[in-house]
Length: 254
Image 1: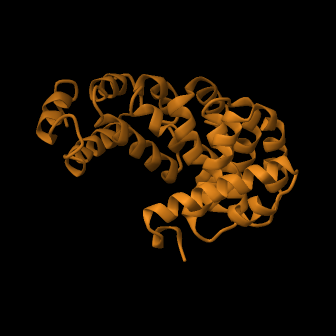
Image 2: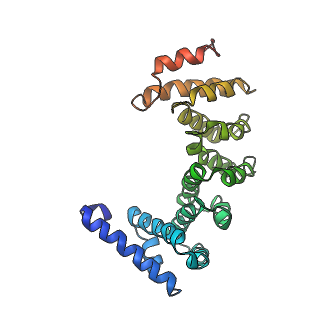
């Protein structure tokens, strides 16, 4: 039976059970429950497990070292679901303190399995939103990595911070404006679109794009921004028509 086949009360009981069993594992230097839940086929059970790690790390000061030892051990697993859940658990820790889990993110960027690499993107997003300084510093180191997939992952990982503080990530995005790889370029365009429709963000993004050298990328980004204002019209600060009027003050050729 999957997590969401249960009613709300039973789901809460399962979450508590997972938390208590993982806590017991940590106190007894065992990995039995963690392996069980970290490798579960149900993504929501794995989520309950990595959220439990984050909560335990936050509350139980005496178990911080044990948690990191556990994650290091499990990260050696051949099971990609376990490695994915380790990354997500490390991301929960990194929301408050990034240095102890930085090595997980660095190794995860080049993991052979896409689900683990995607977990790094998700973790960078949530950490960058709450704990931006070390995450942005980390991201900057990989903007010109020789592996294009790593460059793409870093670009995508900047998105969530940009939705509330676009000024923090625009200098990093600007470094990618001359990217030759279509996959990275498309991700760059996507991220610019995803941050520009949020409250107070359009003006900041458009004013920054005025100073970019690659006018082709700028035009692609502006078209995406306009399109996003229609696709997400129920969530956008401005209507698509209002966004067009604003943008054309600076880019009348659009």
